[in-house]
Image (cartoon, rainbow, N blue to C red; front, side):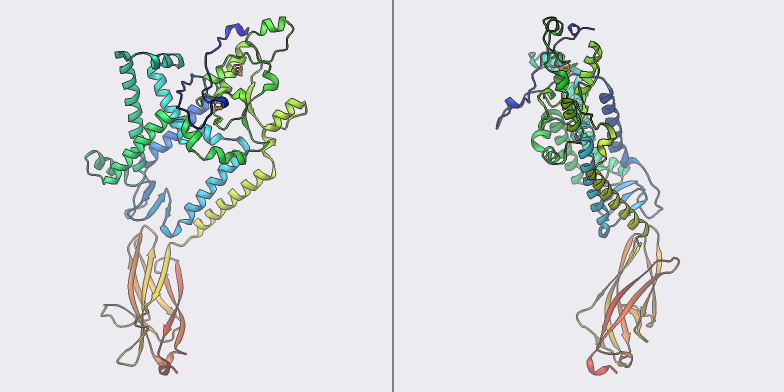
Amino acid sequence: MSNHAIDRLDVEPVNKKENRSLYAARKKIFPKRTEGFYRRLKWWIMAVTLGIYYVTPWLRWDRGPHAPDQAVLVDMANRRFYFFFIEIWPQEFFYIAGLLVMAGVGLFLVTSTIGRAWCGYTCPQTVWVDLFIAVERWVEGDRNARMKLDKAPWTFDKIRKRVTVHTLWLVIAVLTGGAWIFYFADAPTLLVNFVTLQAAPVAYITVAVLTFTTYVFAGFMREQVCTYMCPWPRIQAAMLDEHSLTVTYNDWRGEPRSRHQKKAIEAGEKVGDCIDCNACVAVCPMGIDIRDGQQLECITCALCIDACDGVMDKIGKPRGLIDYATLNDYQSNITGTPAETGWRSFIRPRTFVYIAVWSGIGLTLLGLLATRDRLDLNILRDRNPIFVQLSDGAIRNGYTVKILNMKAEPRAFRLSLENLPGAEMTVSGSTDAPAGELVFDVAPDRLLATKVFVRADPAELAGTRSEFTFRIDEIDGAESDRVDAVFEAPERQTK
Ligand code: SF4
Ligand code: SF4
């Protein structure tokens, strides 16, 4: 088919390099609808990411009667994070820190191999902008219809369409903010409380803030968030190298571009494959022309690849005039040397280092998770008084004993002493006789803190400072813990 069948689209890349200045008012972008592999991929990724975001708080996970049954829950009130079978306590925050480091290293790995895939496919800003544009297109029509409507005077039809679009945007924005708060409390309970105006003020404030930011960022600011607010485009520039995939216009093949190829060829002029139809510019949500080369604004959403492939199909030329390519591929094509394409370009020291670091952290966290204790003993010796001499001559020291039961079931523990001959314990306020062992019942997922007095015969003590050990054992289980402590006595009383 001849290129005469392809209409040239009247579109200017609004974010062209020459148009950049210290300040310029935003020019609206009306991305044209496109079809193809990457567009379909983006729809699928949008469905999966939004599905995960909206559905996750409603998933249930049975942890027994003493723990919440929400699969993923950030329980701020009780300072716990639940993720399916994993429960993280505040002192185990290093797991979250480890996951964040893994996410960072994973992002380095992705960027160094397949470029800004995060920006183009999974970043919330990209996903929600895509969704908002889909709504806009559904109500107002494709690029030309939207541009026409934008310029048209305020008729009833324009008001109706605009009100519909903004209403749908606001509904999505409210649902976005609404879904977020369900991660922080039992979702069904919070929903009932929220609609009956009985939820905490912070819930309404959070929903209001997220509704506002979603509506403004995805509805109005769009590409400006990526270009001016997000630091990632700057950071990723340092991570890309000659082996990283980026969306590339193969100018070695496309130039010199010509809108009248047939005439040019007949006139003996050299022409490239680009027919200057502007389809790639019209679909770009960032308002750039990829034929101008690599640009900070390009989020590598690959929609221009789909648009150009469609054009190449129509004019009977091979696909890939715009394609994912590494700088090495590009140079090879220009110099005529074989390109190191495909998965082989991923095999390089840098990617191995990222994979090794990522897997190392992941395996360490898994190992720690599999072997972590669900019991913790903490001992704090009284400073004032350091010791007390009882009427029978025995010396008494006081300790605050904290027993942490990190399981969602009640457990009983036995507290005993090691290396303090003849010493006995009593619980403060108890009338029980002193004993060598004490038994404590600790509620599920709770910390039991109590004052324990240890009394020892001065004749049995080796000096003014006797080092000994508190030991705790689970009565119906295998967990135990030990904490070293010191028993103080007056000088002349010891043997
Ligand atoms: S130039 Fe292409 S890949 Fe880059 S943002 Fe525009 S459409 Fe997406
Ligand atoms: S690169 Fe492809 S889509 Fe863009 S103007 Fe040239 S032929 Fe058209």
